[in-house]
Length: 375
Ligand code: CO8
Image (cartoon, rainbow, N blue to C red; front, side, top):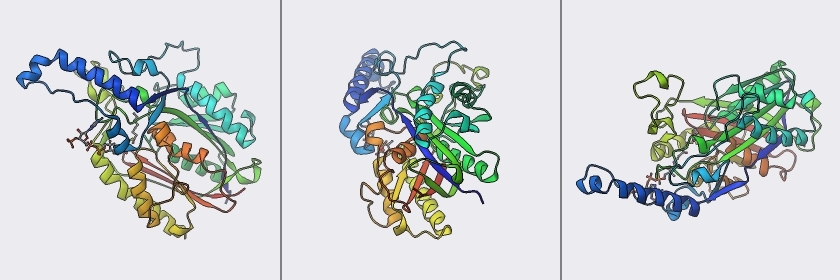
């Protein structure tokens, strides 16, 4: 059987940062304006008052301190509260492609590869800016890669499902080297006017180069020992936007369900046991004991959630270097979160170290990748 390694990673981090403090100032200004506009109805009990948000709550409930975004001004304008992106001609690269090229360039350099070495591009993300042509094909064209590309979406688990798809293709021989990218512009599909979730997401792009082990030449390589994907239908994280919108009554008017919606507490309660069970079962099936795991790079949605999962898997609270979090600086970046954690916290491991990249989220979906540091 052909062995597959991750031979390079790249992270494109947008320059603009929104702190919790800035976010709360904007939200509270919006809430005050809305409450003023609807003062009579609020007094009559026919309209719900919007309470203030708080920095303390955000940090305590999630562990998030700041997030990077593609456009800060639009998000922090209380009369708007979503990104302001420039219109692009069809002849120009789209914004997802632009982000992907930056992350991919770093990943290819780390892998000691050029575009000529790559056979396929997978663009795995929780949203794509258009239906077709595939973003992956635009990225392939921009980088000058021969072969093929396709898009896939499994929400927060897109990257780990993408790794499994790429690894399976390389094992079977339909490709030798694959670029898997995750441009996540979560700021575009977060409802920044919803107090329950306005702090959750940020923007980023990650890229991973996977290739057949015997052709890999990079300084750092992680062998993929095993992958496992799991899905179980749930409406607790949902976005109803889609191509049929125009055909529905009032379909195109601005409605809450066109953006990210979740029942956060329910997600927390239901997803933690599924993820812990999946990791433990997968390790057991591969003959790996929990105390052999040197590092876990988990999905970056919520610090307490990661602590719970780490405790269930290891039987104790993981040390920060055993389970590094990046969500304090990036917030939830959907599928890219576990890959940022991996890219920024894996080079120091010695050869032979075992690690787990695990993502989870809407669907529900869980993607688990067991890796061994090869060199
Ligand atoms: N400021 C102050 N108080 C607040 C705020 C706020 N901003 N928001 C809520 N509160 C109050 C509530 O009103 C409530 O008050 P009371 O007790 O008086 O009723 C109290 O705080 C507690 O509220 P919650 O129960 O909602 O708070 P939680 O402790 O549950 O924390 C979290 C909320 C942080 C959302 C938490 O539930 C969580 O993180 N859950 C897991 C979420 C998760 O992992 N989701 C994964 C989704 S991501 C994914 O899969 C990708 C989807 C596709 C990508 C989409 C990109 C946009």
